[in-house]
Image 1 (tube, rainbow, N blue to C red):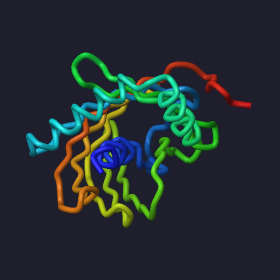
Image 2: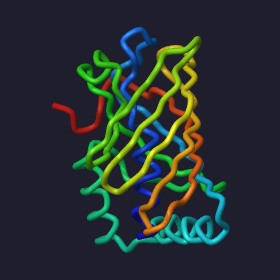
Image 3: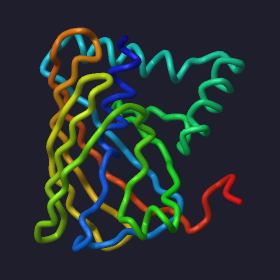
Image 4: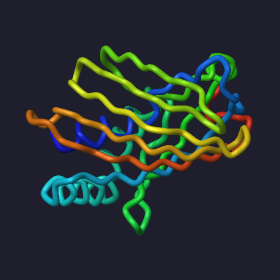
Length: 179
């Protein structure tokens, strides 16, 4: 369940389709750095344990997690010394044309995004697991952005508040494994 909360928090931060009047982003390989915090010391500690376990996986387990992540178009998360969760993902030319960021999110989700000066306001709702959130994305040109999302989730059976601060940077036009 704790791992599900981490996956939900990370996926929700990428659950955005940019409004048609919004600035576009470059297609290619992107790096996302996510700082996740909650209102619960117990949940924060559980997230810390999950991240530590992820960093210390046995080779066979690591390969399995890498394959699962790759099947969703993202890299296996890396953990920074400050607890930041880093991951890379591909924004295809079609996604860039639709102004869509990679989600990796399974489930019945809808989003509502409104262009504002320099970025956009975002909101989403997912049915499975039940979650919702809102936040703001600020562009740094077409090759970077920062975003803060405030998320309410019931991934562990009771409502929890999660804040995810994301910074994203475009790396290159070529996505590893792209054909």
